[in-house]
Length: 304
Image (cartoon, rainbow, N blue to C red; front, top):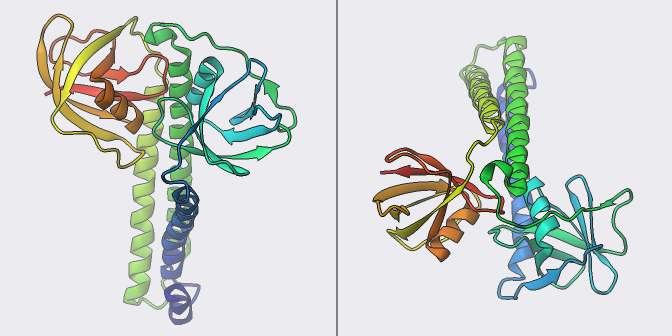
């Protein structure tokens, strides 16, 4: 209603309706999608996961789309990013939540779920997924880790380009609109669009630079296991990055306080096992990359 009122009062020549519809319209669409998914999964709270073992010839892929043959001959369709797809090709196991035509799936070790559908056949042109051996490899040759980092680099690049395009379009819109009325609302609208566009441009540059950093090849030739003790119990609250603090013991007996910023899957594994894996042996007091051999999760380890 506020957007319609702004159009009536200010007219389409004003920048304020564009700012309102662009900002709050996008937020409304995003949260509508999130609430729809939450409503679906909320009805499954309290139900157990079902283990689904994948037959040697029961896994097919087409891009990010993954199809797994069920014991009754039907197919479970879902989408997985690069790292979990490679993990599934080697581990050949999924956890399924729900029993109807629409379910949720979770790879082993993940703290997130993806929606899936039960269909009679896999997508057209889907090809059998080759088996990926599951054995200990250095970080520089870990296929799951390599696929996960490639996905992160692509996502950062796409996000950066999108933000740059939106920022440039916003600045172009501001420069093309004429402030005929000279009103406070119109000036505020132009200033808001210009300020938001500048923020988009800055974030786009940061994401593009981050994508280039992720594309750097890993050079670490071994995993180092640390024993850890957390300051407080870990409670998963979000799928995004979380921070853990506590004490860590190196294999040579050194101990140090640490801060770990990691995705929620790695944080949960660290909290449950009391182990933290570093990519390579870092010098004393220096930060290092953290991960989990054979699983698509990463983090940043910093001694305090």
